Length: 105
Image 1: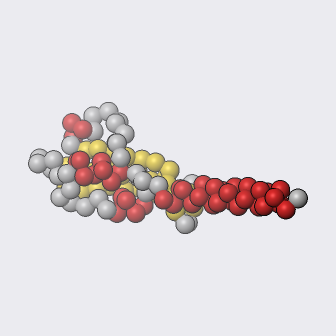
Image 2: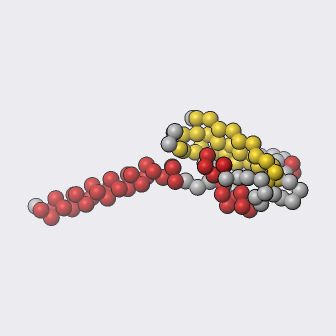
Image 3: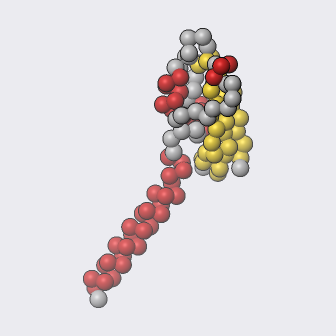
């Protein structure tokens, strides 16, 4: 009887821990988040930007205009947000400026 009680206590503990980790995962995500978008500053290379934000989306004609686009649903303590960022590169392939749009979902 005592062994069965310990086993159930362990199962509930593991399940509770797994549920807590699952609930916190959106706030620990990589890629397009409010915090990562703020890390994109002039002078970064495209590779550095992709390291922070992950692979970009490819709307037609943007790369020819020296622009790259990312968007995603991101999660923060304030809830779920839609974020899009267009990164403009100069002739040397470095970030010139960014355009960021975000709103709560």
